[in-house]
Image (tube, rainbow, N blue to C red):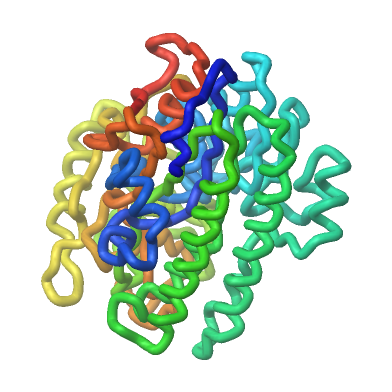
Length: 448
């Protein structure tokens, strides 16, 4: 009997959200036997493809997914952000997220929330029931709160992340084994705290899929050596989702969602190398490797992934583009990006998005002026250090993020997953929890 074939009675509604970092909906749709659980949820509730956020970088995506507002409100635009009024950069952490997360709204409504391994949440919040922060946390002792959670995870095989360095080896066996062990340990921890049954919102994220996709997508797409291992990993993940679904109490709605899609990577593209060669960017010397090394002839620079900034007077410390010329210079750069071609004449950019189109809010001071959504195969890097080429084919990664083709599966008969994006997940969870919010509080809308 499915979860939503049962009567809920008068119990307060609860939600279990399982995040799968980097799971493409197309992978599920193309392999229904591998994903029998997610296919069943889509059939009995609903499931489908959703769009990611701009840019589709995990550090930008998770704050959007967990808050329901765009990066102009979260204040996080990527793995590396620029300080206001400075060329200094930093890696955003949980305290840099300026928006209210869904578990904060739950707590403020008197509900209990267990939050496990969500990226961009370090250090763990002490205002929620329990939390172990996710990717970029230094270790379990620092990442987990309260002491009971810290002790339990420390004494188990729990791992905060997959060792990506193993994926750089030509022999991927150790990497695959490590990813599977990380997945197994993550499920065991989730299962333990799901069974506590003392939460109203459970929010847990599997991040190993993103790592698998980065290093093994080429094997999957090209029928390579490790294709069977890749699909076996996902079959195990789907089995774990199925085990959770089967064991959830009657009053819990299961939601499974991902942050972005994936596709075959063909080229690592060094955007600052291209800007330098095209006359937009120059440096103070030959030995340059950071944004701080650009000189006063620079008109534009780039941060990963595909974010382009004008070196604007009054905004950047040594800005060269007058504010009065902003629209003209930006249009010139936008046209150059639109006509940028790869090694075989393919267009690099699928779309070039203007900042005001996608970023709105009180924290948009460091928003990029333009964002390139690349065509499949072109993975946009920043690349401040000198490179011999703009388009590199020698990197160890064979999979890249896409804006399209994130996935969402809602185990509820009233769910309608269509014309949706990442912004709609938080409102959906709040609706399922019967938590009220203002009409203008969120950028997305409930899908239930």
